[in-house]
Length: 468
Image 1 (cartoon, rainbow, N blue to C red):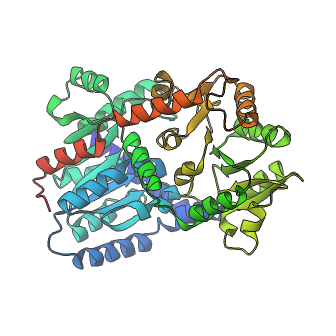
Image 2 (tube, rainbow, N blue to C red):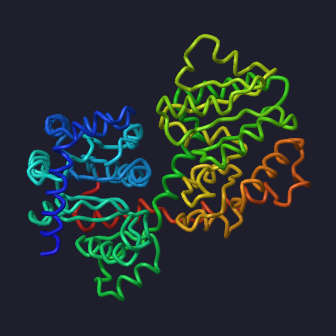
């Protein structure tokens, strides 16, 4: 009854949004907003289904099943990618994937067995039914938080199973009160046939609330598995052409003097101030800076360029890497190179070039992915307001990263690190020991269970998937 009511309310609100979408679309000029609205048109959805059905029909008969995976954005898709790879390679499962945010689009290229992908349309049972029927979908897989009542209701009415990856009861950013968030999350988990949980403590809590223990599987946090997988690919030289070109340019620049690389990943205003202060000092030499802004629309990138512009630095954009003279500017030893990753999809692998990584959002409680640099391992720094990022707390607990209470403390560390002789193996002037921190990170990642294997074994048993 509750699912039916939520589905009706969701479809009603979605119908209102759909009706006002043309007006709303005209008010936004960013590329992401244009894609957001364009991909929610019925014609786009039906075309995606048609193309996916065509691709499926062209596949060998050994295809075991079609799973529909839905993610909120890039971060959730990254957690699903290792699971997709193992299911496709071991059991010939193929996938139809939907996402809420277009930020997932650059990462679709990493998805094994993908036959189609699109933004999730406004809640509409008829459109969902069209996809289920055309593709003969066998299961819905949701990742983390993003639950859509009409979508779940469509699967429930057809008695098709729904499972949740990386499920957690931890509070997300939401306008709802914490108590309501908790009850609603428990309700969604209760509708699934399998819940893959991040921690044993959450399994105990859900079991205490009356949820059957047999459907609660502690698989760990898939973020760790994906970070480790990406790092391993970079280590065996699986780099995109632009990152490969940057790496070669840094080598050319360091022909006479070794270069070190500092990456600022998704910096917020505090980390940008640290970056500006670092660039303004004359104590930092032989360092290449790589900056990945939170957003890559023109206005954001232009604002960042204006904020950093200085006569002593060369600003280079990855989108212009094929331009004549780009590598020459990178190799100009008279100026400090600052490379802007003004296109999505390059940050995670660029950490493989780094000696030091500063991850944004830790001073305002919105910390970004700290596992991507730590997995290599790269010396990883961030603000320690990380209550919503348990993986950051784990890194700090194991002395596998360094947290800072204030941006000034972070700045002082970066300044000291950058001004020391890179040949000094102990960095004696630093209160922390970078070499020990890197060893701790390596040990920590090596000790983790393979989350994707746990999930895939369980799904293969539940859905009677044969080994391909």
